[in-house]
Length: 238
Image 1 (spheres, rainbow, N blue to C red):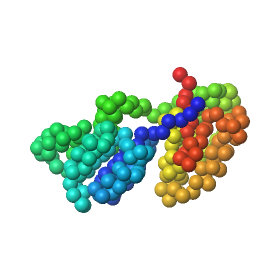
Image 2 (cartoon, rainbow, N blue to C red):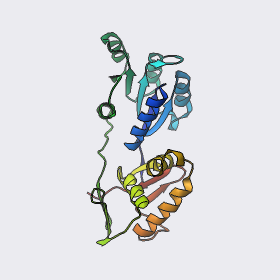
Image 3 (spheres, rainbow, N blue to C red):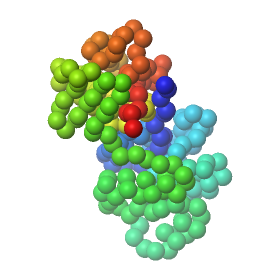
Image 4 (cartoon, one colour):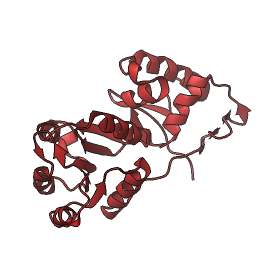
C-alpha cells in the first residue's frame, strides 16, 4: 500500500512575518508550501519549484515589491489549472470584480484569519474536484489502534508505551494518514524550526517507532518511507 503526496500550495507574499505565519499554518494542515516574496521569485518557483511546475492552489498577494501581483494572474491562468486566491489590502469592489473576472477564484481582504483562509481554500479546491479531508484523531489498521485525544496506543490489544517525542511524531503522521509528510514538516512540527537539518533525528525516532509498532521493523507495512521526501502512515481501515 503506497502513500500519496500532500497538496502543494504556492504562497506569493512579500511580508516576511505574514509569509512565515501562513506557511506554518499551511504546513500544520498538511500542505506542502513553496513561498515567494516577489514576482521574480514566483516566476522562478513556477518554472522550477513544484513537480513539473504545477501547484494545487496559489495564494497571491497583490502588493509585491517588483510589481502588482495581478500581472501574474494571467500567467497562472494560462499555465495552471490550480485555483488562485488573491490576497489584498484593497477594500473597494472594483479590483475584486476585475480580478475575479480575470480568473481569480476568490479574494481575501487583509486582515483575515487563518481559519477563513483555510476554509476558502477548501471551497476553491472542492470546486476543482479536489477534496481535503479533516484531520484524523482516531486510527485503526491491522491491529494498531491510536487515540490522540486519549493519548493511547494499542497493538493487537496490548498497550504500547511511547515516549512523548515518539507519540508526537506518530500523531503528526496520523493527522493525514496515507499522505506523505516531508522531512522538513516533521522536523519543524515535532522538534522546532531550528532543527530542519537534523534528519538523523527522524531516522532515529522512526526506527524506534517501527521497533514498537511494526510486526517486522525491517519490512515496515504501517510506517512507510518516501525516499528523499518523507514518511507516511498508511490509511486507516474503514
